[in-house]
Image 1 (cartoon, helix red, strand yellow):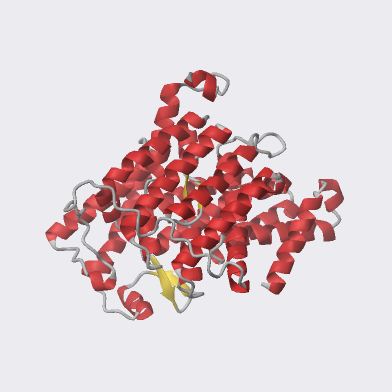
Image 2: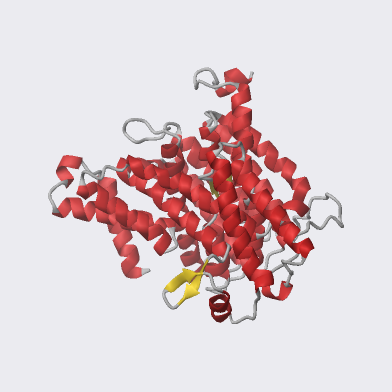
Amino acid sequence: MLEKFFKLSENGTDVKTEVLAGITTFMTMAYILAVNPSILAAAGMDQGAVFTATALASLVGTLMMALLANYPFALAPGMGLNAYFAYTVVLGMGYKWEVALTAVFVEGIVFIILSLTNVREAIFNAIPKNLKAAVSVGIGLFIAFIGLQNANIVIGGATLVELFSLEGYNSVNGVEAAFNNVGITVLLAVIGVVITGILVIKNIKGNILWGILITWALGIICQFAGIYVPNPELGFYSLLPDFSNGLAIPSIAPVFAKLDFSGVFSLNFIVVIFAFLFVDMFDTIGTLIGVSSKADMLDEEGRLPHIKGALLADAIATTAGAVFGTTTTTTYVESASGVTEGGRTGLTAITTAILFGLALFLSPIFLAIPSFATAPALIVVGFYMLTNVSNIDFGDIAEALPCYICIIAMPFFYSISEGISMGVIAYVVLNLITGKAKDKKISVLMYVLAILFILKYIFL
């Protein structure tokens, strides 16, 4: 049955390989169960409820990927998009989180329509192969930068960003933190990167998750020894899981179906929807490019077979996730780790989805994992994505320069979609002006995208 449905032999794999790959994928991306609730809590959402919503959205999205596309890719609420939701739309623009969730829901519906009409597939296929590799590299740097910030290894300063110092941290944040709270966590994060790196070099299965757990365990030891002293007022909490309520699943009620359609037809609401739509479309396309190219799943023309099913799964997951009470659910770059372990079909994704379901009963553990323990995971995942730079043709400057612009734009402008925008604009303009456009047969859609991106910068 499994052989027939997932076409295991045709894809050169077997049940054992697929299951192990699914476990590996889950282990490398399980950190989202700890990170997403903490980010959305900043927007005023219930942390326990968001944990449940995150696990359910991941379960549903990953199942959809398996059933609709038979790909070993896993889905979960996207990093970057959750930060955009919390810090830009809610805290920055002043929208209630219920309204922002409604924007995510509407965006998901629009994505379902676009996925059924081949628009997103056409955009994916229109992006040149070198630029696809650059997107993967840029995402790697972006993820690593987020990790460095989450661990406070990098903080704001006179040079915009600078290496952590206690004085600098206190100055930027206007607090009186000490080594026993922020300082030791930075040191533990650095140690965590070293430990995770060793595990990666030793090719230990689940190295990313083991890195998180070991770093967290070191933090707990420091707490017992009095080296780490929790200070909730400064955002440094106890590292011990709270099992006072047992292993019950946190109620999803505080965030489930809390959609607010009251301002759906206002101009401001439309702007928010468009912002989510734009960011999500190109984040998703960028991530699919990054994962599939890293997994060597693109064909000779740089296309991903059966991409319509993958895009539709992504769109359905986003819509369902918004109802559950979490931000845009999208394909995860960490899926490449499962593919590296030999995962080639939807059976890998099914395995990952089941583990997300089981994780619902372990909420006290995931909710206690601190950001300094998850940061090494992000930094090392960034390394995995960075290796795709070898697939860029640096012999052709007209190809390499737009790729370079795409890569640096993502971390510097803190946006995957900005990197794609600038990469596309640079690719079209540089090749057009230098007379190389005809030889490279740049598609009409690339010209259309470049014009739309330019108009976006002019009017938005």
